Length: 254
Picture 1 (cartoon, one colour):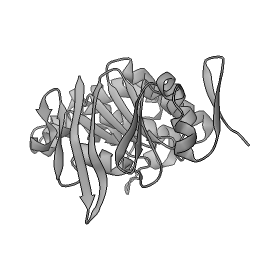
Picture 2 (cartoon, helix red, strand yellow):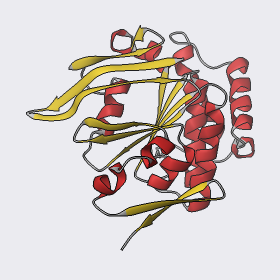
Picture 3 (tube, one colour):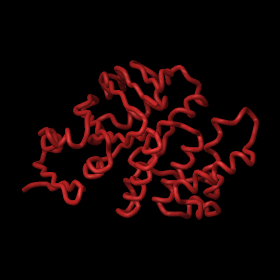
Picture 4 (tube, helix red, strand yellow):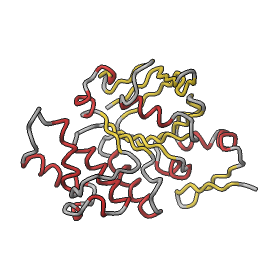
């Protein structure tokens, strides 16, 4: 699986939020989009997902032009996992995940035993099968993130876009969610994750893309990033990164 973004630009009025953004990614990677508020991360995601009107540039998944696909066909290739989701109705976890099969159903058809078995398998894969009969609004934030992930997997999308998936979670659930995302990439999925957390980016990413003022400032591995002087300039503070037992720790210096 391959994702190619070519010369993507987007303007709100006279303000250019994305400015000629290009990169190529492949399945089996966890890619972190790192940037300050207003840097263009959200606009990039909305552009990739077709949630904003196409202005300039191209996005391909395995040579399929996302901007020319119907919504249903696009959903089979790329899925969005938001930071938070609350259901109006008290759906069970099983039913909330079952909604993910919609792109693979024909018009007016409803899920059958095949789809319910697929839900069972994906819940087991993510380690949340014990939650299947729980109210999706009555489980923890970390568990809800995994439910949203399960729903995305049911659509069979190969590219998973996560909008700050750990922003509202405690440390334990942050690590659990990131480890789950990482495990999916080992099965061939491409995971694109936005975050403000530099330590998470350094420790979990195969690739980091830093965005500033709508442009790509850096695109490479954690090791390559640490070989530059970008971080201190980017955060306007002196930063030291140490490694302890294979874990990067970010230390702001006085």
